[in-house]
Image (cartoon, rainbow, N blue to C red; front, top):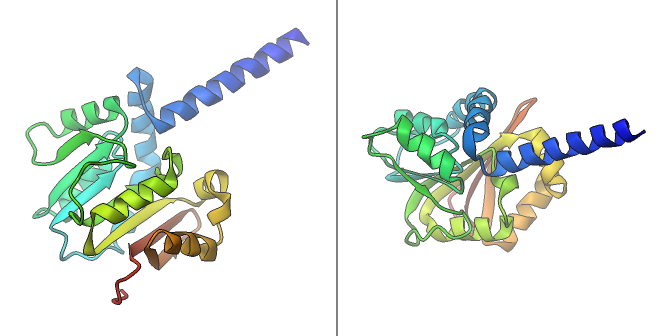
Length: 210
């Protein structure tokens, strides 16, 4: 009985440790976990890029960059854009800067709920596989709304399973759309396959649909 209890305690401790690492990677474990995540979500990034307009993106923000591989994809598709990448993890930004040493990509340790960027600064904001880990989803979306240019778009892509687990109230698209509307945002497109979901969002006061 004692062995069973100890085993459960160890497994629970390991689960919560890995969960914390998924939110904010640290140390060597964080480095390896980011590499592991790349195998899962980079194909999703490539898939999502097929739904993003190729023009008008002067400045691009990649939110929650991990070790910077998603930012690499954005830089390849938008070589003439100014690209910024942020993450709450010091280790993540350290790895991203090391990967792109000497590049023009600006990587910074920042929390999405308070980025300090000027208002209406980015034409494209990308969020890959992390909005469900933000400390405050409402504050994060309000901040993205603030720094989004008037005709800009926010794209969010993630595994459907993550939405079901972390944000079950928003499995129904209608509920997510209604929630965005309360924040002054509008869901203008949604794509999904068997494993991934992609949202395209703009300011609610825009009249142009894509």
